[in-house]
Length: 253
Length: 342
Image (cartoon, rainbow over all chains, first blue to last red; front, side, top):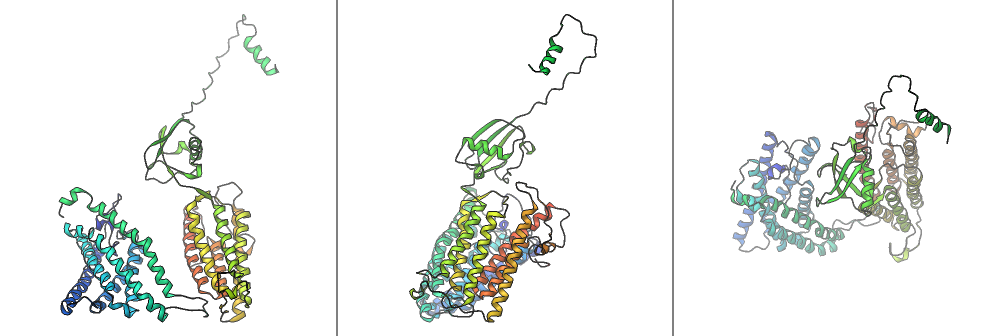
């Protein structure tokens, strides 16, 4: 899913509003370029890992094991740069010019990916061999390679039209594909969670609180109903805004 | 005819044949200044369609007067429902603003947008407070379908559960009574859709807390009666403090006036916290919920307290900022909600 990457200004997307804000300074731009290059490289490692494992095995079953470590690393990097980024730039210096285009959507996206990788796929080992895991990992990988390379080139003011077009077109297929994979994975985890009582807290206890992880997972699945269309149509609107003008089609940046 | 009229007749009409003695010509009376009336055009913000043209609008008319005139032509849009602005992207005009002071010529164009159905703040506050009160009692009396059937209409064996119910009920009854008799709500209305959001938050939180506190498997606080008493004292102290602040704020401005003053401590010791904090009503409210958390030792209560603290901090910071902006002599020692900290 794709909102703005941590640390990309609207200007970097070519979405600047009527008020022209001062762009990020040299230091901030350097930080953002390095961050986006590292993230692109990280997701490329995952893509290469998937292809190599597939060629070696001759089957797409159980490919998750070959990319588990790099996936966790990339998500760790995303999480650990997104939240400090928010506090440093949005709270301490709100006029720095590097405020993300959609903080809520980006935050939701980062959280959902970390949740799916750690709280579902890592915690319920039985689902790791499911094809649905491969479905969302593939969707994430392609989306993120395009997205982070888009941000990198935008920051360097050399954005090839092909990448711009891919950024605002591939999601049409990749988002539903990713969401389908995520939902099927959570659904596959439900019986194991119910059987083992994973992460569940029951009464009586001294904190007077109970938590049923099984119910929580169902609620997470239900939450996709209002949230996914919002994100999807947000991107459709962005696509219209960025690729909608006829002159944009002819212009190669 | 009265004497004054007769006197006037004498001076004007008496003896026209006599030539008047030469007197200095009286200065011609100054003509009353001609009032320049305004022409006000109201345009729909979305469709840009002209909705109404008001000619001969007095320059001393307020935005509220214009809204009232607009309401006459369009009865479904009562003044509270209207938002008028001078520019499609500008902020909406306040009701008190006077036409002649606005940056417009004698022909003014106002952009109208419909704010949707409105409710008075009093109604919203009552709905917010009555819900938790009723919901909590439903869990306290263990109505059917809440816990397993064998517990229907049973009572808890723990004294702290009954005490918690008394405190919770007292808190919300106090809030209802304050809404009815103490608060002077300056801002008029809020959109109808907000009531669902606000009530949803308060009602769900109350139900969530009540479910665990009144649960048959509820565990009493770790440090027993001592912890319960500590929580109770904190709760009661802060409730009295909160009420004292509300009364002090009420006495700050007479009814109907919109003049804002800096709140200062009064003879009541509970108001002395005004030396340190701009919004002590929120400080005391936070203290009450901390006391309730200590008393019940319940995670949902602690979570509600944390969320309430974040929300009240946002409100307090906003209020503190507006005080600083409005009053140059505002006490510098004051914090927003927590003395010396926040």
